[in-house]
Length: 114
Image 1 (cartoon, rainbow, N blue to C red):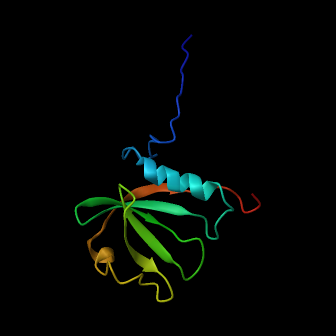
Image 2 (tube, helix red, strand yellow):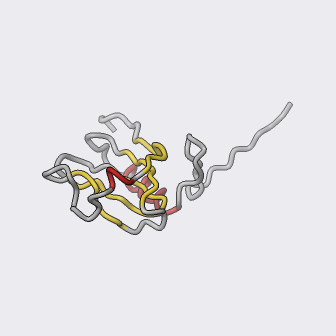
Image 3 (spheres, one colour):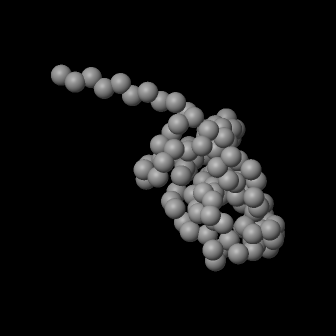
């Protein structure tokens, strides 16, 4: 009989797609979202290659708010989408054209009642 021990370190969480580890600061942002009420729509994080960097796009927690883009060190780069116009903050106008989608990193699957 084999026994497997699964060790979970929240600072080294592998993504489902096998695309590597989530940086510790990104995991901390996830933990922060999970500590609060469920967003509407639910929080999502997607991974992109942009300007030769791995980046993480966070959805906003409500309508007409910016969707923020961070690098692997959690430095805020810009908001390529969201806001009243849906076009972001104007600092990454070429994001839609130049970014390469690498996968979905995380989706908050909690139900609204929690």
